[in-house]
Image (cartoon, rainbow, N blue to C red; front, side):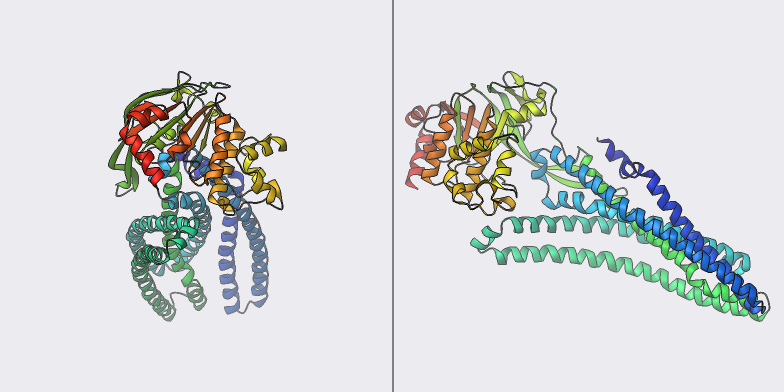
Length: 592
């Protein structure tokens, strides 16, 4: 488990302990000024009632000086807050994002998108802002506690009543915050679902419109919003009843304290000036209860957000990729599967402890995809995997590129178990072109340079030409410097795939994987890409998954998969001649 999971927010606070200590000191000084103001104003009232006006004016001038000191303290408090709260939030965002890069592809498939967005972007701000709020509230508590002690000195009976009231309200706050904690967890989980749905809606708006799904998804989003709304109402109204009980008790006792104060003035136990001091600070004393309750509420927010945020460092919940230490400058590209099995596990995240809300993953279903398969791909050859949907083709590609980890068996590259290869060796050795590649919100040139940051313009144009993107780029006003928008939204599906293929070709890796990467191309573009792939023969190990069997006619070897097993192996002509299922797939494709 990552050390950050154990230390939590304290690791980040400790890095700025001088600034944070200064913030606390200035906050306490500001609160001390409040206490001194109360005492000096009380003395001023005493002087006025005794007709000592010069002393009263002098005392009030001292109060003016205290106000100035308090204002200076608050300037430092605000400056430190604005600077270091943003620094700490940025550090948390950065480290959480880095951690997200470590997750396995399976980890991402097991959680909603909102699960990561909330934890990485929102929770850090909530934690830091609430920590700041706690310091402010504690400073207020110290102020009101000092005033309470002052009132006890003035009159022990009123002081005892106030202390008793605070104790009763503290018990109410204990039960209130216990219920609030549970409801906050539920509210966050429902917000995660909404964030995930909205991310999907924004990314797929064209498909939604073309399929006429506005009404259907509108109802789905309405259900999620209503679900969150009901939980929010339950959380807030339940908290309201507890707060109301506390506040009513405070108000009733407040009235009683004032009546008692009048009684003590009447019998001569306290002076009128003392009564005015107690009366003027009555609200300040009762704010002690409100501040304590607010601190408990904030602590719940911090605990919930911190647990969610730092759970990203818990590999029991969010498994990460792991690499070995073996480094190879240039792999040859021989791939071997030895009795490899793989299954998709569906998890549910549950609270394993109702009191601490400790989370754990529970397996709810298991779907076997590959069953003890073995095969060898020789270096610098071209192979293809074919079979019906769900036969395990894409899973094999994800296992080769170590996006997934095998459940049993071994995968070797050049005779080395890929578990032992370091990250750079593995990533540099394999280029993967997906069916739906992601194009970044950059220019065409910048997207290509992601694959090879020192590529010359000549290399870029050569690669674009090989990917059959040359004519399109030349037609653009800004050529290579054309921005393509978020997710490549300004490009067609075929143009996105060609740009992704160009990136892969530019990397010139020993192993290049094409996963349905020509599915969005027309016949002419597909023919051009096929020629580009053919040019790579003998230079790289080429692995292709394609529904269009016509695109793999010339590969060296075809693996035919069925129900997670390799049913047959051969050239295109051999499979067409000897495998009925393969032949039927070819006929079905051409009929369509």
